[in-house]
Image (cartoon, rainbow, N blue to C red; front, side):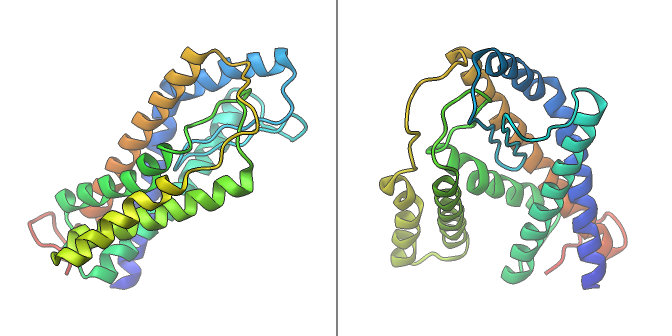
Length: 237
């Protein structure tokens, strides 16, 4: 049974990765391509683009796929791998907490994933386009992991603990990374127009929100069907 559940989780991740690739092509990818024109003309040498759940890192001297079908295929491969990884993380949380899982509860898990992996980190580390100054990558990754871990723990406490001390502990975990503060870039110069950066930040957050809802909903629906053998109201416990 566990094997079938894991296969369902992998399928949900694959489908979600394909879905988010299509959504990215509508707005996110065009914004990245537009920013790259500024980067190439401005001679930036140390920039990268970051989108939680669907990240791209750019280096002026590194190999990169050609624009068009090759770039789309590599992006889809990356998104599928990310989707499968996040799907397995969600199903691990479901199994560890012995929670019921269905399409509706899957949406809730997806929403929590969006809050923990995208919304909370973005309060300190905004999505970055090529040509934008960025903080030290190592420090940013450490802060991102700490924020995701603390936010996930806080959400678990809010969901499964009702005692006041536990709730206070959850609140501390929720705000602690932001009180500490995310690492800041060495400078604030950017060759990318501010309106383009703002559009990219909005587009990536909206895209990630859709990705997590689709992932959670698909995961709940597929696992429910796998366990029950039909699309009724049964849920795993």
